[in-house]
Image (spheres, rainbow, N blue to C red):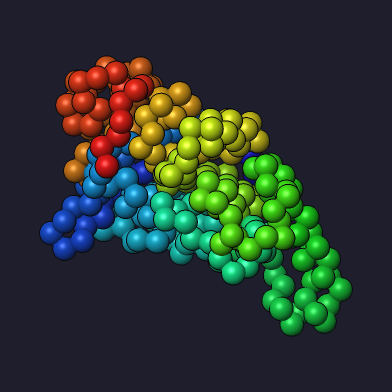
Length: 265
């Protein structure tokens, strides 16, 4: 699902507090369509919390979220998926006992109408299941995993499980894809492949919001970067602008070259 216009996602004054802890504090940002936008910051800066609020896993304490001009602040996670917002998780969440193909098929659950018994009894439901399977196979082909479709998801190496999660998210037909540390645990070869995959995803008309610690990946692939520290936005701009921001250097990137800096964990 592709989209045109100036703003795809608008976040205004968003906060998420856990008691006295302000994990996200008055954050505003806009994401334009057709771009790779990244969210960076030190460990504990609120990045994953922000993604959890955007996807509906956490409710916002204050502020608003708008997707395609529609307020989704109080929408359930499944409703947000139907509206075009999909995500992956920092900690892989696959059904390890199901096949890779079955895992990817679950990504389309919110867009199908068939339950198990309906699928057994109604030809239309069986056709829907066949279409779901075909779409899942296409997404596995896209991420380079068609050869392991029948394998149990839990049997795959860590990097391949990351790709299965991305394929599952893509199967939901997103407008905006939130990726929470997709390069975590990947070797350099796998990270290079992820870089290519991200660019190909945007080539399909899908916008990406990337939360990532790998600065080489972030600075190389991002069109726009937002920096958080202690739950607040401290900088935003192009990779070049962010690298030159003294506040970012002090809070997060250190004094060395940002492209080669190791992220604080």
